[in-house]
Image 1 (cartoon, one colour):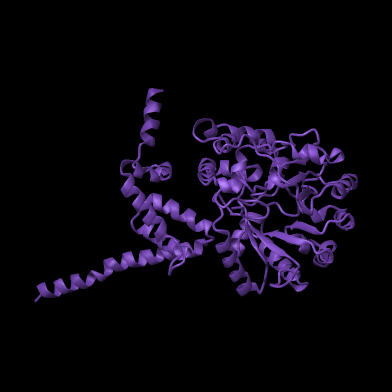
Image 2 (cartoon, chains in turn blue, green):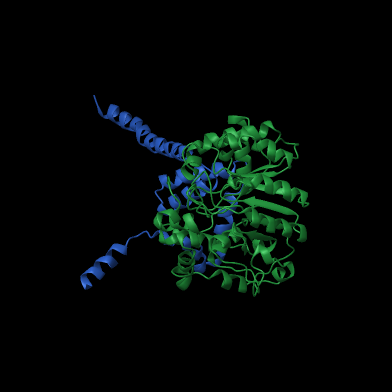
Length: 121
Length: 351
């Protein structure tokens, strides 16, 4: 029994808990002024501007995957669904992120080639 | 998410209204979240009271040609509860007496009631000017009996309100069943052809958007713009307004929320999005819902939860407007669905 209890406790202990996303606003409790400023900025960013909130949501989704933030992935998949964004649009946005990530690796190949050529006779 | 039978036919425990209410009162509402009653009390409201009666919403029966995954009625072809002509006659007497100006016909598929057309004709004679029919669209394409519905709707200047969860085939069919999207498009074209939904037409055609999953609807205006653009570009279809309606956690949608592990998050989202402004205009304050067997409810959702009006006048056969106006509206946790975000009603957002 104790062993089972310990095991279940252990299984619950992970760095990320999906329920913590709901507590995002609590970060203000330890510094109200900066917290308020941050959320005011955050909310302003996602308002309609030159880009539509829909476009911003897709950018956020792609960035969320790039920085591999599980909270952001949950949040902006849900946000996209609310906005009627389709899964086809979501996966295309992710491929943009994937292409830039892959491109960032590959473009450094030029550095490798430069170095290789410089060191080689 | 394809469903082939109603929950009632499947004998599911959650088909029972009492089990749904028990589920909605326990769990997180015992430990973490405020009940709806507590929430409105914190606004200084002891109870929710009706305003002037404007809409009589009559449910002509739970029979439907579709079996939608989110349906709060648990409607389908296997549901046999439909309103009799006698009950309709009792409704007509009330229509003449009451000062409700709008008759809102819903179901199931209200058109499947064999006395649907007779009832509309008689209600028109009784003085109803503003008819709403909540049509699922595919009924118009179901068989010959229904093919002239657009002309019938037009004759009585009926305002058509139809569900359309998305402007793409995949999302629509997932929620409403295979082939529903194509049939809905064909039906919308027929409605457009007789004049419905045209920009300057008085023949009103509105669409209802329900999220196809465990999330809340986005901004109604933004969704309307996207729907209009897609339906016009892809199919040359026009309509007037889009109503974004939140799925209430009852019946099939509650069953889905629990089975998919989304129930707690969904309820958290609803409670977090509670908007005090929306409560001023919730539809239970200006509507009375009548069930197929003549009982009276604060709304169609309370009807499905078997929560009859808290009044001595709880049946159409002894309808007493004064008594009903003094009643207290019955609330439970499902009511959070109507007060989340911009609010939700059969007429779309509220605040």
